[in-house]
Image 1: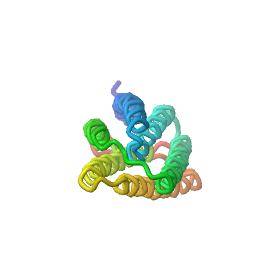
Image 2: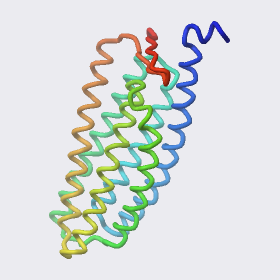
Image 3: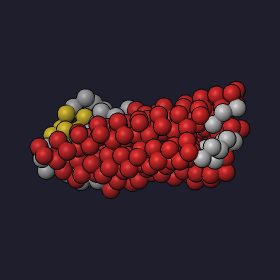
Amino acid sequence: MAGCCENKGCEIQALRASHGRVLWIVLAINAVMFLVEGAAGWMAQSTSLLADALDMFGDALVYGFSLFVLARSARWQAGAALAKGVFMLVFGLGVFGEALHKMLVPVMPGVETMGAVGAVALFANLVCFGLLYRHRGDNLNMSSTWLCSRNDLFANVGVLGAAVASYTWTSRWPDVIVGVAIAALFVRSALSVLGSSLRAVRDGGGEVVRTPGAHEITRLR
């Protein structure tokens, strides 16, 4: 045990165990909220709720990828981050398409459902954000995961804002505008994650892991 701790192996194992617990929790939260928001968005015919539901589904996939590469090399983690970026980009473009459809086919969304479900989603994502925040600088894997959680909060606030604005002005446009804004956020974040992961894949170097004790351990691939 002493030898293990001298070469920082214990710290790496403890950090990965902590990452695993957090990722399983946020994976479960996002999977449940995808089903809840997806059903609510479909019934309320809300672009912003459907966009947020797709975001939840994308995040569940992201956290699944993160768990898969948790004990693997830096090259594996960079590849997983690359896959996350692709999913984020695809979902962002999908939301753009849904928003365009709503522009051409006028439908007033159910604002009461938008507000109630949006508030539940915001609370759920605040829990995820709090769990992931302390691990955001540990490595590329956790950094890209935290970025997804941060974006969720912006999307949730946008859904609530759209519900209030649609109710106030009796208009579908706030819902469409927020849907487009969420899509733009997805695409911007996707490009950022793709850029970082492509650089990591190209460099093919060691993985720097920051432990709670502020040590930096470099593990070669």
